[in-house]
Image 1 (cartoon, rainbow, N blue to C red):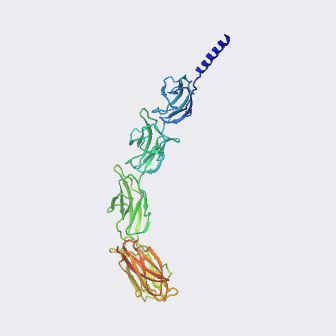
Image 2 (cartoon, rainbow, N blue to C red):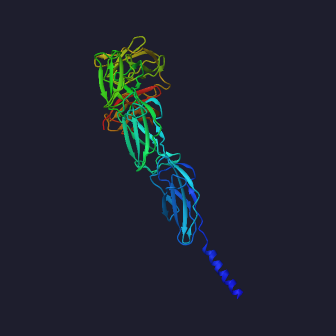
Image 3 (cartoon, one colour):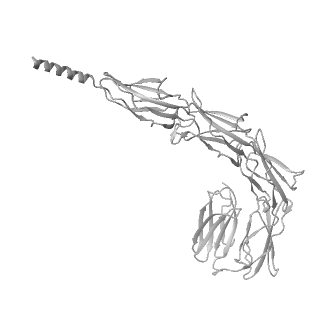
Length: 498
């Protein structure tokens, strides 16, 4: 009888022990306790627990650590994503698990603080260099390394009055999601801000139920005027057709420029408008001095006039080669600097003993002497330019010594033994040359600015030889084709007409 009673008591005790097994409380994972700068839709996460039957969780969130008025969420998962939390508020949270046998104890209590400020990026605070009237205002879309989430839009304010923003000059709301999800920065573009004015700006974030604090207030100053680029102040030897250039300012409607012979810009003056940051002026007379200035404008304001610069139109052709006293060939190439806007150049060259005087005209910045000069003779040369009824002064007079190269006489590059055809050409040019022996000839094609656009070297055997070159890649126009062997040279005008 006692044995039976013992067995019954043991069985009852074992059943009682099994029925009293409790589910463990959850362990919180993230955010870390006392974490700051959390998003308004921060996700609360905890480690799942094992239980008997179905396991569910109860989450409590409160602004009070005693949970006197908590928000209660029931969920079957081990995470819960919040929404529309109050900016800058400290929240406390805890989790309790339950299964078929009952409830666990509450987890530890963690806290976190929701973000409450936006970081500005550019223009930099206190920028006085001068920004454009359509300056882009840029702010961060991150809190430290985290992308900001849980907001609906950013609000931007800009004021030219004071940091209290009693008057708003520009305001914008930029919807969240306007930019890619993981973008680092958001921005808005202003328009028609006043020139030479200090502006203050700030940004804040909003969602459906709350708005965060305004960011720091940053300031910047808009550009006060146009910065000139070229010509430099006091520039000389400018082309008849001169280009004025200045730094571009975005967000303007036009530039106003003035050019005068009077530094006080009294009447008459050339005053005009352009939307570009450069302008090609009409042709001026040689040797004239001009003054110029520029200002920018949009629909609401104009800048001050820029600094005043002066420039002088060239009044003398600048020779380049041959240099003074150089030795040149018997058919030398004379070169000088090109003057934009000039119609023609007049070249004089003569023997130092005044036995010859040649006058030539060309519309290029070089001239190939066709006539064979006397060997060992000093020659003088000078150039002047003209357009319409105006001419420059004569250039300096230079002297060169005509000298034949070694082997002179073996090959005569002249019109009698050279044929270049067809001329005009649509691209393919044949060069026919009669040589008394095998010779290496350098063939060059030069444009009107003196730039070599094609250069090849060919070997011509004795007798009548033909070579073909392809100029199909060149634009239509007038060129010079030049054959050279040593100092001996032959040049002919060539027209490309495709």
